[in-house]
Length: 147
Image (cartoon, rainbow, N blue to C red; front, side):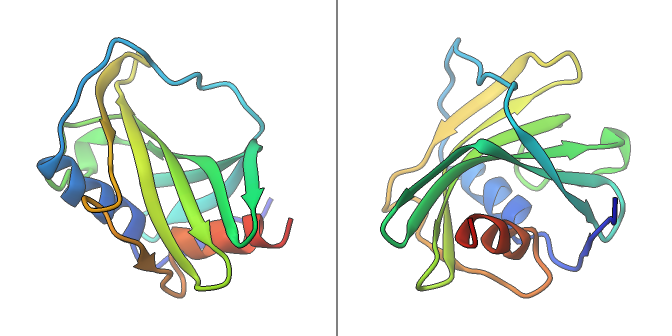
């Protein structure tokens, strides 16, 4: 398997920024089972990116799916406005025509797969962002918009 190195942390930064603004907690935990496809690791080698192929839903130019970011060594990770976590599972939406993405919700899990925090973002709380070349979002875009 070829490992893809990403130059940007757009998705992780977007999650960190928005989590500081919107904090809601629930007793529900996302089912971590699925058809996970590894997309690669960050440039630092500390974040593994994956996409749940069984969750992909197409609606015209919009594609919604689950993605997962796994922190390989949490002690070496900078957490921007978020609690320290091992895994972040998000529902992401990509507009294939406009080449933009938006995170709809995210759940942060610890090393024991226990829920730390759960957030949902409305349209006004988190607007679509452009997909940057070399980013994790670009790898997601290539996968979901071609299937």
